[in-house]
Length: 157
Image 1: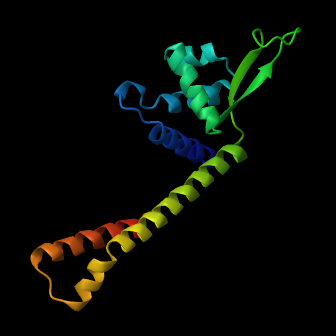
Image 2 (image 1 turned 90 degrees about the vertical axis):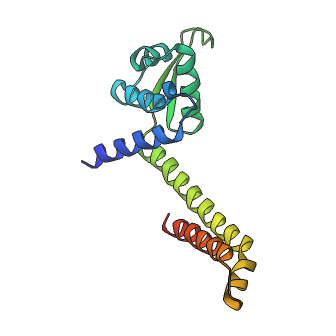
Image 3 (image 1 turned 135 degrees about the horizontal axis):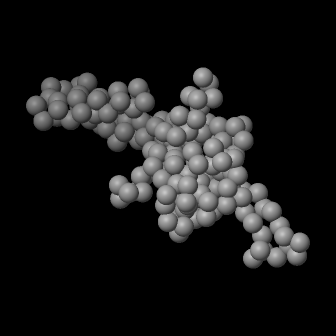
């Protein structure tokens, strides 16, 4: 059950993280991840075929996911060790590495939320001080309510 939940979480993360402007490419990285998860090791052309995407698009997404450490590759050199004839087999990173990346991303998100909260408080500090000291007109009261709403959402995130 835990493995299933982890893989569904990874699928959700990849779907949300690699969103493009076009609907056709949304979820492609999650599909590639699932292909590699089931195939264990696959060449780039196999990934493209199994994920039902063009080779160029597969290459782009594989390198994006590799750069973000969700997947890795294994080199299988031929006898002459020529890079042109070397086969690259793509695979999913082992659990410890990929979930360390997820935890790192979560920490970055938490830091960004905290920094955004501090920024919002700093920007609206004068308004809050003014609120405590004076009566407000309706426009100022609406601004204060909007700020407090943003602050509450950041606190809950």
